[in-house]
Image (cartoon, rainbow over all chains, first blue to last red; front, side):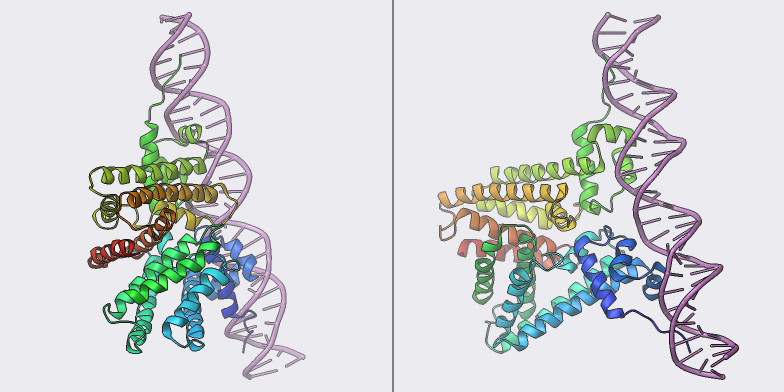
Amino acid sequence: MANKVKFERDNVVRVASQLFWQKGFHATSTRDLQEAVNMRPGSIYSAFGSKEGLYCESLKDYTVQMKTQIEGFLSSADTVLGGLRAFVENVVIKTKDCSPSAICMLVKANSEFAEKDSNLYELSLDLTAQFEAYLTQLFTQAINKGELSNTLTAVEYARFFQVQFTGLRGYFNRPNVEQFAEPMINQMFMLIKKL
Amino acid sequence: MANKVKFERDNVVRVASQLFWQKGFHATSTRDLQEAVNMRPGSIYSAFGSKEGLYCESLKDYTVQMKTQIEGFLSSADTVLGGLRAFVENVVIKTKDCSPSAICMLVKANSEFAEKDSNLYELSLDLTAQFEAYLTQLFTQAINKGELSNTLTAVEYARFFQVQFTGLRGYFNRPNVEQFAEPMINQMFMLIKKL
DNA sequence: TTTTAACTTGAACAGTCGCTCAAAATCAAA
DNA sequence: TTTGATTTTGAGCGACTGTTCAAGTTAAAA
């Protein structure tokens, strides 16, 4: 009883996500987006409501993708820490050149949205908290499997991981530091185990 | 033989710097700036050339201020590490609520400017490299004074410090984490000494 | 084949952007 | 007091912003 949508919603969100991740919310114009996803303004606005609506879906999709990626590395690793390490290496080293930015899109979002009561700032907080909770689950497993001591609680390990990972990604968002990546990741995981 | 400028350039740059730090470059309009520094567009443009020119001076001033702050803490501390620790505590805990952002303005800049050959991106790289060089000097002193072992080189300590500090500041750019600040700073400096 | 609800299109709107420049104001030197 | 180089002012320019919506297109249902 009608026409059908001609675009694949998931694919549109993924493309928009890449652009937003690269340029940030404010520096990405709706015309940039129109070109990237090959849709006219009316279609975008009927599907996503607003630029903010599309960004919102993009950021949510980004975190889903990140978790999916971690799951992938975990399933083909012997240990939780091994899986996390493969994930970190993949992000910091292997996909560095094909990624829109070395910096996590969530961190970029949290950095960009200054108004503390704006929708997008609160969204970035929610998703970050969810990700910390997810990491906490993983570190709970790692402790239970005896990969880590329990001198720190799981959530403390999760916090430590986030600080290290965010710090590393920020550091590697510049040229000519590739040579330091592997030793610094070594250091990071050595520290986690020694904590 | 002429009129004299009616504004104090240093003060204008400092005010602009706070606004840019809080909102970022793209989300700060020239009208925001005009109101904040109480100058009309013509005056701003004859003094700084462009919005980018003013941002440029603001970011440079920010790094000077940061170094000045560190110097202050160093001069009233017994050790280099003690001075750095006082600086970190001041940034992460004491000035958290009166600061435009928990995140370092240099890191925000590096995150915001995606185009790798833009003036502002390269400026953020230069200033970051200068800051790393400055930290390297400090850690050289710390090693020479016997505060640290020389299992790591000074520049490796500097890199480690930057990763930790950036990671911490990113983590604390959110509400309800004040209670974790002191223990995490303790952990950071404990790790530096144990490396 | 006709109908009709859903989707797509793109010109265009109102608002904001960074920025300019002629005119007014200022003040040291003559 | 007059001169004249310098600074300040603010209306306003053209470009661009996010968004709307009437008109056109599509395809399932009648």
